[in-house]
Length: 118
Ligand SMILES: [Zn+2]
Image (cartoon, rainbow, N blue to C red; front, side):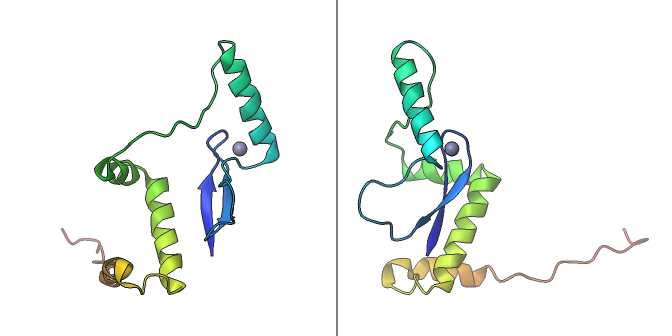
């Protein structure tokens, strides 16, 4: 299975195999961004502004709110969960409740708008 990641420097999306390979997780979309970010960090040490990855303690509630505030994040989460579901990764007891929420998401027919009918 493949996960979509976003480069914190340029915003490009790239794909990572899941579960990921051993070693440090990939953070940048390309060698170019990785090198540029490293250059920028060095420049930042001299007073310029750089994009840096700073781990911050964030509550689950804050994570959820941040995702719900972003259509892009919601799209990624929904797509990823659908892919995991299709791959049968939500069968174990830890993920059962997620699987049942997905089953509740079955689309209902939309009410049709009709002209001359208010
Ligand atoms: Zn990039």
